[in-house]
Image (cartoon, rainbow, N blue to C red; front, top):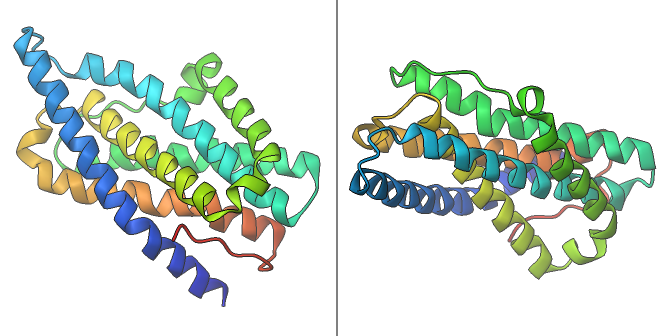
Length: 216
């Protein structure tokens, strides 16, 4: 039964992920055009700077959703904090950093491995902490259909943008020539980690199946 719900979550995340990654690639195409228009030949620098905006924002949304899901099932304060922290920093780090890094290597780029929580803790931690706080306050709101759709949409969109920005900023500068493969890799980078951090991980930690929430 639990495997069925996990599959349901993945299935409902997939359309959000494909659309979000597609919009993200369109946005990066515009950024690429503007960079060349002002004779900035290296798109990696603005991509890195934007990554350090979208990655912390992604962690905030993830910490909110993960903490809220856990808190709905189990009212253990410190365990909820740990769950929200691991679900956002570790799992979303896989989405925003590890998978784009490996994707770049597979596409022939010389990638740089950059872990924000280690190299820029003061950028990342405030977003994670605020996300956990909101997660304690938000379960009643996120339980409603509008809240579920809104939170999932924000999470998936910021995740897709952050993953694309890491891929381009830390190595794959010729991404337009490989845009088809980039689309596939980035959808994979978004849908599985986002579903895992929002739904699967907090439910496994609580060991409960009392309530299941899909983004439909």
